[in-house]
Image 1: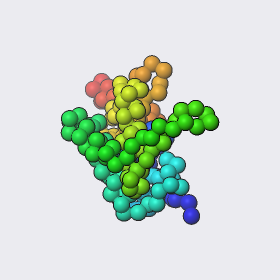
Image 2 (image 1 turned 90 degrees about the vertical axis):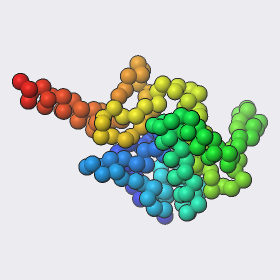
Image 3 (image 1 turned 45 degrees about the horizontal axis):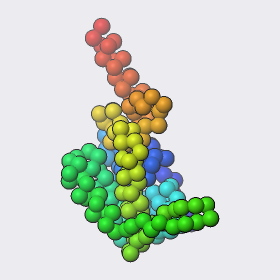
Image 4 (image 1 turned 120 degrees about the vertical axis):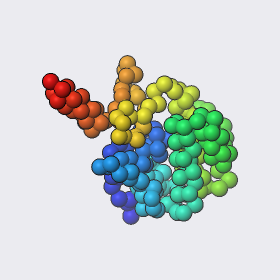
Length: 180
């Protein structure tokens, strides 16, 4: 049976940021997709992981640990965050392979329930290696979402121009007209 529709306002980000975006604000209240196993099933399905990982309590616990580690690395102390991300990464490894298409890498986990958590932590390292300055938090003060800036000039500020960008513009317009 397919998972329910993903209720989050921002999806399609790289795996690490998508995991962080399982928490979002709605009408001043923090929403959490990973509050239960049904939400985990939605997140796994949204990220193409539902075929390899069952949405059970162990996968949820490990995925929440990875989300907290990524949150600490991005929004807290990098020293503390690095230690927490490394603790997640300790549960898997990359095995180099040779395929008919050429060199490859295959993730391996002694305990498969760490798979989604490990893949998200590994993705964060890849983002840091590729373009660390493009990993962003939404500039709107009431938003807690993260995104990878793929704009040509690298100046994207909002998770969504339609939502947070318009709210910020409306607030500035209101402040200007109120003061006039």
